Image (cartoon, rainbow, N blue to C red; front, side, top):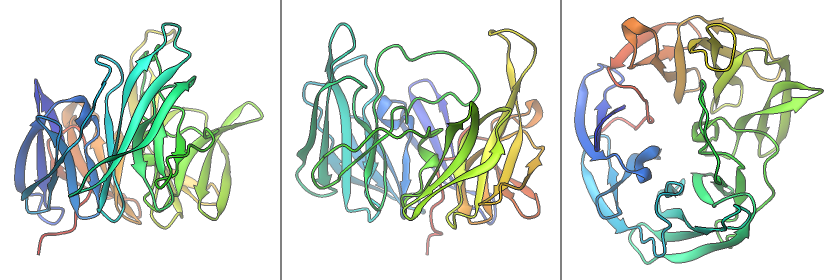
Length: 327
């Protein structure tokens, strides 16, 4: 769990069994740590001086390597990193330049063993979509977003960290085609390469479940404001967050209204009325979520999707992931 204040972010390692805080860390509130990663058995973050560090479930911190960024373009998109599923390598990317008309973005992606020397995986030049910035590393690909200039706006679930999502070969750096199905954020992508996304069919929006074995479009159209797509590890349940505006017009506030639990592939489901934003999975039938109602705002809960039971874990505004229990 984490909460931010000023130039630092407080990270709490919390026991799922007892809701006790096991350890507390203070990490820089830098662009690198916009989305700290939980991969395998560890949390990863970037400390001062671009030093990558690893944290286990007991709170033990290990220093790994420095993520070099020669020719970094300042005040552009945040640099980003991902860890391989087997926790042996790291890939990171950052913007280098952009043309004045925004039609030629240049970026670089490095890859390195966690205890070794980096090499350039991708020199992306004259890209009309945006800078190549990693947001997920799956069993098949490194996924990069390609954001450019002009991103902004306000609304529920807005997150540009996966815009123009594209698979990249982790061995050659070759970029695949732009995905035609929109991811909500990096947690919409599972480590096995399966993901939940939104696609448009006959002018209506539907959820699509994509796995290494194929894709399934769920039959029910989405008629509300929605986001935070989550697909469970068994690919049998999809979860999304719901929101609604309070009034008419483009400048009205919104509220988060619940979680929709949808069965795959039937599309049947139910709405849990708790005003929570779904987060990472704990297992195939439960996940972490952040409560958004005023009395319970900025609190992380576990939620059982079978019974609807919830348990408050900590008073933070974001859930990062789940680590195995320390032995």
